[in-house]
Length: 110
Image (cartoon, rainbow, N blue to C red; front, side, top):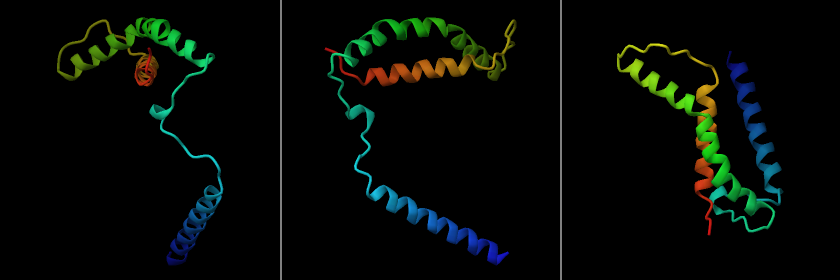
């Protein structure tokens, strides 16, 4: 058993060394998304269209997800929930739209 733990520990140390040496020579550095400024004539209009058109449309289309969350809230509060049919993807679609809207909220628009 001790031998197995020793082998696992050595494997982890080796992997950590390989990763640290592999990334040391990598010329690109990660940048937080809120530090990136889109100024090109290609991306800027698309972001504006997403903000003005796509996000409101997507929130409208995911309204059943909001209703599903309200039903879950009521169920957890002990209230009787009628005519509610759970759907596997309804919440995740709403979360994706919320995430996209949150990212767009960090983009400064003139």
